[in-house]
Image 1 (cartoon, helix red, strand yellow):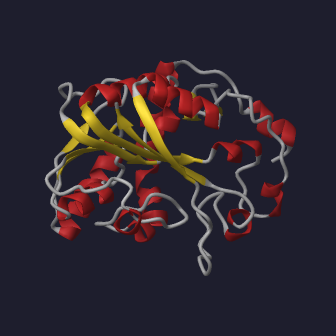
Image 2: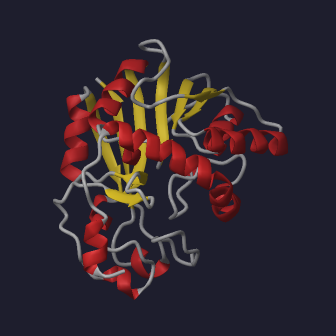
Length: 267
């Protein structure tokens, strides 16, 4: 892809277009996504990122036993099932029926079941103060136009002092093409261009939308929603980890971060 071609895929979309595109894409891609990444993610495991950080080791959520937890943008809900095994009371939620179908299939394989809810992250179907913890590993946040409103919704359903922990693609990755090889080492996009990456069908209708915010934008969003930010984890690429996941690769991972994990609590 040339720089000109890449730039042409950045344009403004509405919240409605973003929502429709996300449901369309993840319903369509659910099977292929699980075929490609399911072995790495597991059926009952909590993997924060392609670098392989696991909640079993990192304990970014703190003590989860006995806690009421919402996994937002759960995909196949492997993290929710892992949390259930740790003694948490968990609900797994996603916009995509295709991904929730994958979650049900993983339940059959693993024998571990959690409640599955299909809903929009901007209109969480839960009472205020219903959860002790909300978490997501690459779910929901990059796929809504108004992520600040999402942060407000998370704050609404959390109890005071509740934890909000989420991982996203590191904002600096937006500068580069989504390529795991040497072509992905050259900066071609302005970091401050907040227009989303958009794929379209032949009629120009968005079929995939991924939003970009700077590191400062994310901090302002969580603070504006009433959270206290306690950490931003930028996982280093682990020695001996040679797996390529999309644009994540050993080559790029050893030079600059691919993931940012935000650890917050509701004041």
